[in-house]
View (cartoon, rainbow, N blue to C red):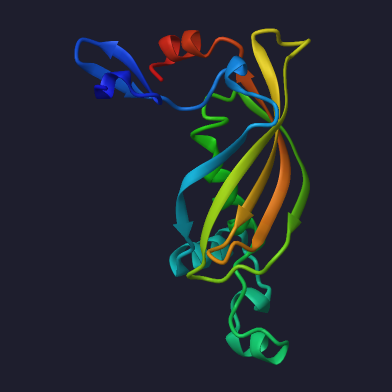
Length: 176
């Protein structure tokens, strides 16, 4: 098998391929579980940046002594960072061609996350159907779960987003 014949790539010219991003409606199979890779280790830099960007003053995220006094060994990573890392891992193979997010429901943080934890994500396709109001798009709902290096569930949500019904046409028109 040559690299041109491998899944996840599209021939775009003589001896030229393009990595695929996202999926079209017909590529979503209800019940399918997608394991997203690579995993991501949460860094101190990311943690400090999200606190600065959001202006989050909660000492549980920045004051080690406060954390010790309330029973934590170290500061907790801000939930927004956890959520965004997990959701970000899902984009390439699910919503990379999305024209819009519709909903983020049932958001839950199941287990604390600390700097240095390595997170991975998975998506289960719950529904996939053509949009009635935008027939050029499909509406997909996935159950997203994030896990740490010890296989503890750290995050979950249900995400609904639009995808093109004809992914190849969108790829041709946009260079993706």
